[in-house]
Length: 298
Ligand code: GDP
Image (tube, rainbow, N blue to C red):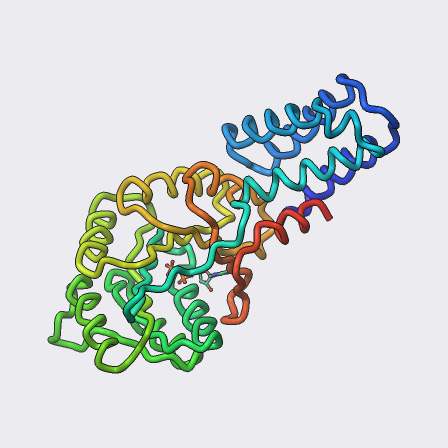
């Protein structure tokens, strides 16, 4: 991901570096080229507009005019503004004062939510926690079984509905999982919820019911970075319908243009917290805005 954007920006900066002092025309031309590169990478228009405005404002100011190497200074500004767009500081999970910390996952079907639940559980365990994976996606056939397989692979306990014991009621399952976690000394409860192929009121309603029943410490919105501009629309719908504290980008290993990754934080005001980069449990990492910006400008 980001290869095309990265290549485009590299060539913009190469031509900029061939100049000594930068005129206003040079800066305008550079800003125009960056704008095109971002739009081609599928970054949402309002994000591109704000970004370019910031770059232009700073590039025409004293920090560039007085720099020993003006072109280098422009690159530095672009890097700083990219980090800013991506969220600035790395945002960590906020743990509850009294265990268990409840983390709820929400997102469309196919976003990679269940896979992510397994990855996050594995990672939390490696960080020294005792997570409980909860299968509250009772909509998708096999979702419960998928969680059980993932839990086994990750070496993490799974809480799943037993036949005749609240089956079909994800709110009940989620609620009971918290009691179970208290008894079994799990310090984190990780709840997978049902998604659908498109945004729909029933799905939002169910996610909101689970939210109200378990009052999560963190709601993470899981979104496929390959769906382009739709990622922004979907994020907005979940923000309005359920609300969330952080974003997880999945499928960053894809060859898509990556605009979602660059838009979702700015549009929703919620930080990107984790990135999923493949189908295996290990293909997962904490999202670091500075490292991502570095990769784009590499
Ligand atoms: P859910 O419906 O949101 O629970 O989605 P799943 O977790 O079942 O994932 C849907 C599909 O995407 C599965 O085939 C996963 O293997 C795949 N998948 C999930 N995360 C990633 C990722 O980061 N990269 C790639 N390439 N595939 C992924």
